Length: 216
Length: 234
Image (cartoon, rainbow over all chains, first blue to last red; front, side, top):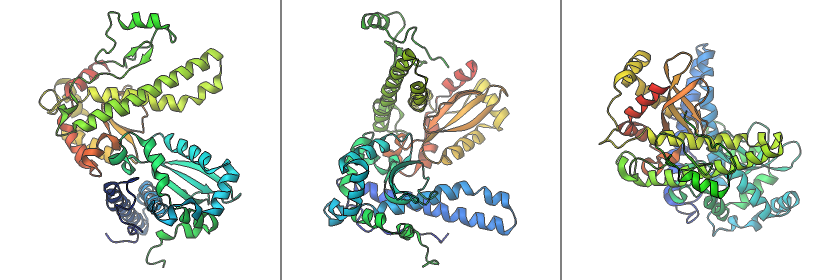
């Protein structure tokens, strides 16, 4: 089944994040796991729409769990690929995010302190899930939030600034049960330029990778 | 479930040493074992490589020595913190430990049950249930193939990490297929008979994103004798 949602292309090669994240992980994660979320989202949306057009609210509602899960998977991964960058690129240097860094220092007292708290939140997730640095809609404050499974940062109007995938498929082939090393090493490949753009930008722009062809 | 609790939660090292060397083996098969008042990693009754080619030796080794050990260690840390809270009469601290107790305690219980309901394909693994278990499956599912299909569908439908179980509904007396998220243990009205771990760490090194192949292969190493024993006692 085609569309409406499609797998976004990565802005770097599968091997470009080594040694922090291996080529094999990136390839499976993008071409298999993310693709499955996209495929199953499109299926669930189509089934839901078809049921509604037949006046079957019950059959349409039965698809909501799959839409939420697979839609969340598509949203989360699309945001995630963009907030990673090869360690050698200028985007992966913290100097690329001066305003965000200042806000992090104002909030937590320093980047390393923030990274410690963020890492502890990631390692505290019981099961599959994600950790995010977000900017709250009402106050503009920075917050660390964790979400289970493929729940997405969409409900409260927050702006997702950077997220880390804590599903085992995101790190297991390289790190096995040593997820603490994954949490440590991923800082080498964070795209600070993207984080800065999301921090100072509009919420809609953070989600622009999700636009369907019809909406463009 | 035969969880053996220590008679006292805080023993001295001397008492603990005598206790551990007593008549009861510290790592008795078929039970969640405690030595020195602490949960301990149970030994497997088969080698890490014994479930190949269905589950690789590498997976079994990391799953048992790495993951399960971490649940045991974290459970013991949580129990210590709980003992402190109890000693101080600190209800707030005790309540704050509930999620960790459920997660790490559940992880220890679930994996202990899981190792036991697996067996090498050339020993007790695979084949079909017999006797009273077979009859109960036919009564409640219509047949073994229907049960397998139901469990595989349940496993495939887990959104995130979790487990699928064949369980006995204690009040109804019937067998049911249920799922649990993360490390939530099977408790209350359900008695766990057979569990399958659907966390990615249970299959990823061998099957990667093809989890359906893992769910298909694991039937070759299910220990139906053990499942039948559990039904007898449930």
